[in-house]
Length: 182
Image (cartoon, rainbow, N blue to C red):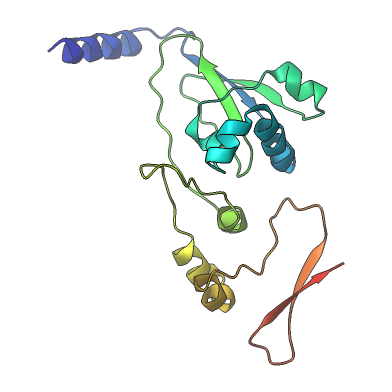
């Protein structure tokens, strides 16, 4: 009963107050610096990194923006106001906090060009209840020529944020791909 009354009270406050105090501050790191950020986080939280390669998904860590600046990892600070949408791009790490009362909802969606990010994402190995999105149907539909290898655990495509230029080409038998580093 208390929980129900509390939720009703919060929803009443949220629906009756039209001020701009319902906002969310978010710090965002560009995808191009995702790998560098992961390395920094692993060096600052070695026991967590050792336990699970995807420990940043557990939402148990916070890193000061001043440390990001010191380590030459750029970030943006933005405020999301009531009624606004915010899209977080793949491999763009983010963190934030509310300035006041807030009811927020999030959803996962992706564009076709985001498939490679999903294929290269780090999976949580220590928790069963983490969100897991299988890339199998996406590879099957959008990269059918790679699907057979993908199902065998072979990923022939580079991570989209890899600095090293790579090119994939068909070999002479047209059924296998070769990875060529330029």
